[in-house]
Length: 68
Length: 164
View 1 (tube, each protein chain N blue to C red):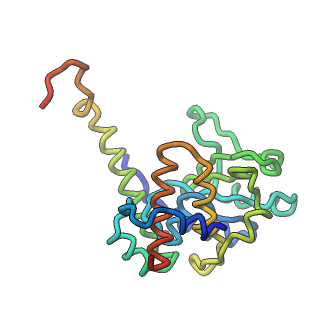
View 2: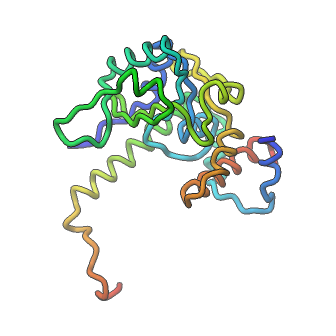
View 3: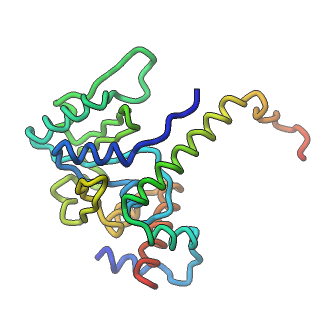
């Protein structure tokens, strides 16, 4: 049933996922994919931490302010 | 203070090494099967009989598990009573966030999901992972924009894997 539901998805729909990344991940073992996620998650958290630390420089301008 | 490196792979392997029966679900289950997603926690559905819950409790104590989102200084630990129920225990461990789920969408619990899982090896341990097709079916019942985006990525991954 699950496979049939997947086959029902429109084949002409453009991919949402990055196809290069899909192929690269397909070539890895499950453990290698999990370690890839660990690296990505660490990067996301570092970015979040960096943005939070720099908050005074990233505060939103008030509504109605000039746009770039 | 910099964020510590994430060790979700090791968290998962150590949970498996504890002898606890569980299934990996959620984003990390999709990642393990090739979906290009990034997730910041481990989601598992555990078997809720008392022997398994005791093993899970011992493991959780070994990784200093406590509930996330508590005020500073107010540490709350998961209990046996919570883990035998079908609720969601959203925990932080020494190795990263861990969501321990008694049941997920549609009341799906360990026995009902087990036939839809496959085994993968992680750090020498066998981990049972709910199949991509079943993960996609679960997402089809969800309604948020994020869930719809994840569903599209899961469907792309299934289609690519099938060569379609």
